[in-house]
Length: 251
Image: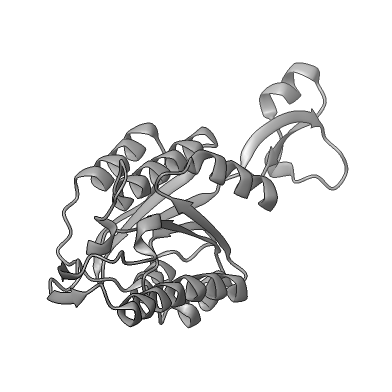
């Protein structure tokens, strides 16, 4: 509760709120009026697994995640809201509890830029469960990831019943299809496994495309059915326009 104004005492007012200084000045009772302070908590959940370190244009996906998270954090600071951070892979790499203040936001941004993860794998459900356990009060939650994962739908639904959740999918257009380059050695960014892939095979390319679209469809379906918000941001597009358009529709 925060102080709003002073007004004359009315029958039924709480005598504990009488402003004795003003009352003495005017020789009649005045009380302090309070209003509930607008205080929101924003939790940023950033995927820092191996698949985020990919990009075929000017920036990697993890760099866009950092920029979007910083933009959201500074926006929350303007409203005097609390901001917290969860960096995750298939484990919780870092948790910064929500606080207010410019220096707190600068620490969050520094961690987003400099933090080195222990693992390259991804577990979105685990990260959502952790957030649910540490955030007892309702929060505005942004999950930033490429969402090349599954098995998080049920957990997301439970979390969305309490918190205002938005998933921001960061992706590179070149991820959706494998070009025909013949026999190519590829490395799985999350497992480190090296594979010799015949990209000249149409069935191989089709299977990969189907797998990728399956992850995208899973993301859209999971967030839609849980009542959460969802947003797609391509690395070579303006995420500012995407965010403004999203918040305008949500408002």
